[in-house]
Image (cartoon, rainbow, N blue to C red; front, side, top):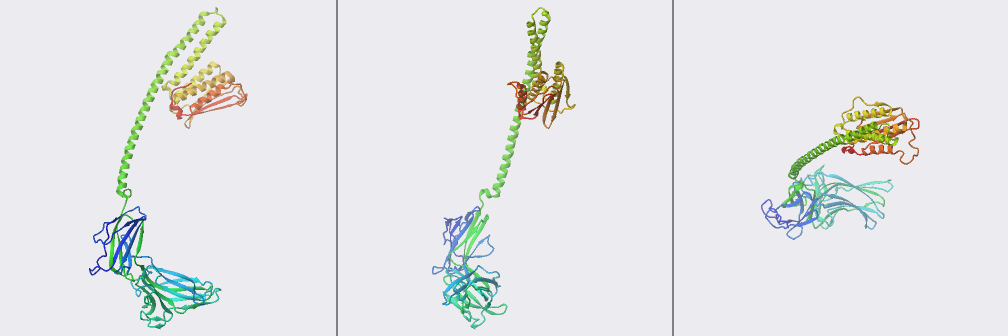
Length: 565
């Protein structure tokens, strides 16, 4: 429950008026909060969050007799630049009557609030032109014009009407008649209760319909409805009906100056108020809108939620900045730790590779060399005494030992981290090819750039390329019968390309073959796929064979530098 509001403020003379104005309820997004009245103490502000879509104020006034006696005006200080009125309307009406003077249709034209140019009184105000049209319905015989203050609404205000004209145009448009309904004759036209010749007073209180002299453009009487009674209404209506027929178009023109408002009870709604302190004020006024000096005020504080306040966002930005800086430091620290751990692993792996290379060279390589030399010694010592079968077996032992020694030499070279670059790879590959072709009695041509870039090359890549090249050379020497073998090495676009081409007998890659006949080709293809590369083969019978091995230098598979297979 909110604290009570201020009672009626003291009047200009210091005496409390006879009104009883109060704000009975405040609605915040449709949720009602009752407000106690009659407390002369200054109330605490009504708290409204700035996220509220609407704030509604319900207010009322009771006179000495218990009912409303005044026009109520309101404003939200800090938001409204002028007083507002309750939306009550006065109307101009075109009535259509049949031959028995019964109403068969009507059209209304509303007038609300204050007209443009209103200046406190009718005499000082500028009049504005209004216009309305209607079509006569069936059974229409005459038309009647009426200006009425309100119908059943608790409205109050002042309405001035001048220069009333009616134009009747036949349905076919053949005939048009104009009727001047201005106040130009009658009796006592300068008296408020005078009788104009073309108009009669009607309504619950006829005296609310009055005459007034408008000073411009020259002094002349006009129709006025001075409605100062919320429970009554006044009406000016034409005394003589204007003849017309069904389907005729009726145009009503008039000039007006007015101020119109409502009495108790009242309701005002404001949408999306900005944060700040406001005062909602309700005041009593005369029919003309002039304030009587009695009002109540209610403070309203619209506060921004914590997350809508600049301080919150500044603090949050500072906190976010600190958190971001801390997070960056943590990420940088962890990244550095990962880099150090990776370097340590790489160094440990390189040390292990170097150890394996030394062991292979010192132990396996030396042992195989010893076997080969002992085989040579045995062959020399046997002379012509042993059988051909024994000599053949010893010869095969020597050849196998020699071949294994070469393989171990290749594995040692691929394992040694000192050779993890492109230049060492190209040098070893060309040297190996030259020795192999010389031993096989083949001519060789090497297409290798004089200057190769300083690029790192993982041991696994070197190993797979070397094994694939050995397989290609062995296949060429064993099956193709070439006279020339060409070897190409190229590094471009982040890829390493090695090609092997011979001028041998060639074959049809698409021809069916026995199981296992092309196992070497499949081995070469798998080796390239394991390091993220590609294998291409071109051959035709009598046209030689060309093999190309291609793999990216930076493929993820290259991270594992341990030779396999």
